[in-house]
Amino acid sequence: MKFLTLAALAVATTMTGQMAKAETGLSALFKREQSTLNSVPGSRLSSFLGFKIRPKTTAPEDITFTKAWLAEQPVATGGENFACLAEALYFEARGETVKGQFAVAEVIMNRVKSAQFPNSLCGVINQGTGRRYQCQFTYTCDGREEVIREKTAYVRGAKIARMVIDGAAPDLTQGATYYHTNAVSPRWSRSFTRTTRIGVHLFYRDDRYRTASND
Image: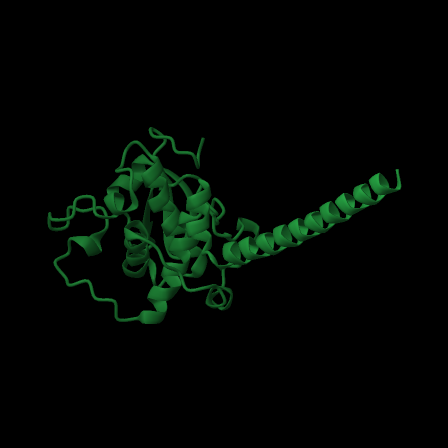
């Protein structure tokens, strides 16, 4: 009986030692895996796991329409459609207030959502380009070379473009898809519903076409 008790104790001691080693080994393994995961960029990790990690965006209520606030925001980057919108804001509205530039960007986004216009930012902005003064945005068909000379103004517009694309901006124009400066009075403006005035621009909505902004 004593022999059996000693044998059982020996077995128990051996198993306890093995379990302790196993736990130590698992702990070390988990630490190595955690270290490896922490070193993998978020984009690659999310791709591997089958989901996307969305970048943090500015909430509409957090936006302050001042140049000082805009200067504190991170430099914006993006793809082709981002570049098209940033360029459009530079050539179309760089002399506007920050709020005015947000409003112009919103109109372009509203056009993308409308069945009346192309379904991409670049498509909307370049619609009619190639026909002298027959395009939607004059800078794309006025025959002049498109040169960005005011870097600060472009960087500011690019930040606005990024935020509007990310859905950060509030509804400023009530679904407007047209605008013009207060220096002109185009004939088409009589056919549409004027929604608001921001800065030097007047904004209009064509009620024959609905967008997500004016439903």
